[in-house]
Image 1 (cartoon, one colour):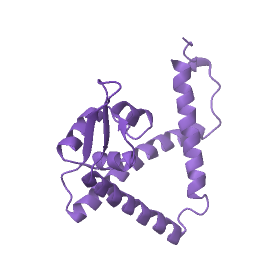
Image 2 (cartoon, helix red, strand yellow):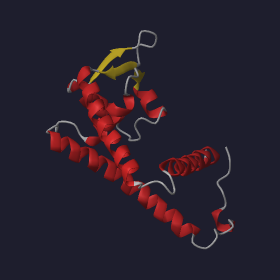
Image 3 (tube, helix red, strand yellow):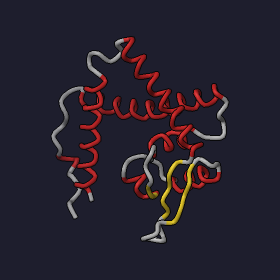
Image 4 (tube, helix red, strand yellow):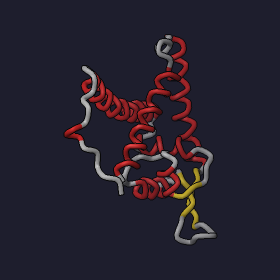
Length: 167
């Protein structure tokens, strides 16, 4: 086990870095909530109200894959703590098919039903529409959306490395 970093003697960040970091953290939280609100709004617009946006995003992320609940979490398709609850609701709603794994009977493999695939197409269409608007309006030309993604992947890696360091 690695010792915890000594934050009391850490070198302070350059001026403005701490505030920028805190602003970025808040922005990431707000962006995630806004994404869920955008999905919810689209589903309300088309009259699909039996799914919540977290479940819709989960269906989109599962896509054509057949996986276990553990794989959903480990691949980053779902970040919440209640994946089993949402999968149960998706099975009950006819969006996900599940079956016991033949090799490990404790594991359940899931895949989208045609109904789940339809939700995936709707969310994918929404995202394609947004990408086209980004491109059309030059919203992300400088920095590019690709550059922003690179920065976010660096942040993801930084946090992942930090978690491994702590534990």
